[in-house]
Length: 319
Image 1 (spheres, one colour):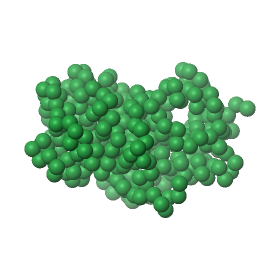
Image 2 (tube, rainbow, N blue to C red):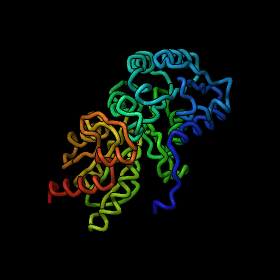
Image 3 (tube, one colour):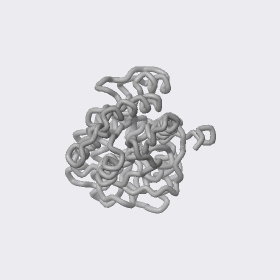
Image 4 (spheres, one colour):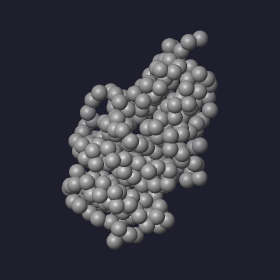
């Protein structure tokens, strides 16, 4: 898979296109926006179904309350805004109105991670996975590119009957998976086979993990790459099997290490098959304003740092 042959596409486009296309099949889907419709690609749905889209302005907590009412009335409400607002500002309402009542609803956490860039720390959602996965009844999806974000929307509608949080970024990135790649909630995907170490990645860090695996191959290291597109419920069986077969893990995420993918994986492995694990992610800090690529580099969210981390964990691996 050569990077120059991969199209670049923002995952937010996949969310908007997925919502539009699933709404053609399901008349119960209602779109809700918060004053930034086109910025998060909800305009794709709104343009197709203007009578099924409602913009509330900057009133995210109120939107969640409306979502609950719509869900209780038999509709499937889908709401998207920046993840710092969708996944953090609305936590109380999501917890009580949606999760406590276990209502089928979809929240799109757009512009997630540090790669939002110049918007800075206030708009870089780095804690949303930790918060959302801690809520009872909430499913947390973190697709790896635009095509998988598209498929995640379909899965949220067709495979679930409970609240769903879908996390995705803003910046154009390699759109490397096929829409034909089956998306099953709760089932991770082995994108590359390997026996020496497993790189467990989510979101846009999956692409960095694949690049790292190629660099490791040049060093004689066989790295398995696993895409965890469902943070909750996480694929326990796949992780335990990988732990037994490769003996060492590196997790990679554009999120705080605390409470994110690293925490979720560690919870499973520590209780079932303990092995050395190292983490690539944000290490208990806020982000800052800057060019997205430069920020990813500064905070170590690159294939180069994954390679360094793999070499580090292999020194701890049991012979």
